[in-house]
Length: 361
Image (cartoon, rainbow, N blue to C red; front, side, top):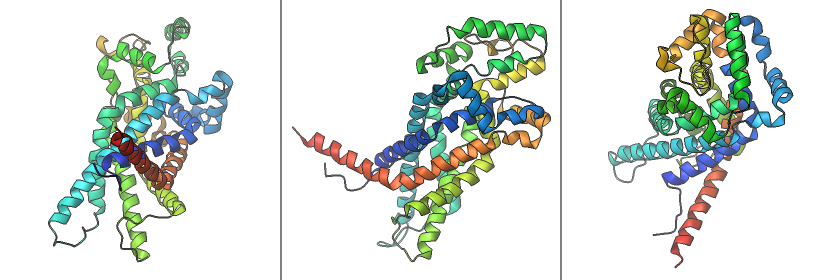
């Protein structure tokens, strides 16, 4: 086996996974905050309580500094697996597609640059495959970040019986709550069955357009900027700061377009959609570690969540927590693009190290 001199799809996937973990770890407390804000079901009069600073202070006051890092390991595992799977599938699909285009052209001629539509379709296909394989860890990470903070929402249900039910369940389950990765996984399976680990898969598949828009726009703008400089090498790189700027712009656009579905997905995974549904129907609230949907309650879909938010808070409600999501998404994606080349360099070094170890008797 020859010494690796360039990255394979596996190498690009490794670089993407490492870069994703790095960029998310840098601002992880903001990730916890934006998840709490997105999962909260409040009226228009209580929106001011869901500011980034307000939630940061609330977590610090009630849970201490470590409250900011709830679900950190699960989130890093989810980030790495999602980024690895996405970059793996994206690199494989894109490389295969480019080879097919090049095979149809005269020998020696370079493959034509991909259109924006082609970049988006390839990105969406890669994202869909990655979602199917990695969403269980995403569901667990979301539940860990939320913790028992939604029990306050249960306490606001109409009627004294609902108040007593919420208070009683919260007190009874407070001591036995296991917020480890396996503990939360067991809780989800007890409540929803094994399929509960795939909660939010439908909006998740819709949201594959998010990385598709991000990477499609990034590659398009990158190629335009390189051509403007007279650069003809298809493997040419942008400077770190230019990559940072283009990455931030690309992610901001993708986030704005897809945000309502991002919020709906979080509410489905965190079960706040089920809590709100039970409150509106004046039916028993979902309880921890106990089945809810086998008692005649249907799963709440993303469109139902969005319609309910529209009735309660109007169009603005669809963008609850948008500022936290946008700041987090833009910074993490920009850091990812800015450090992408460096992590690709390290990934190649890892591949060379593995090659050398395999070569030893």
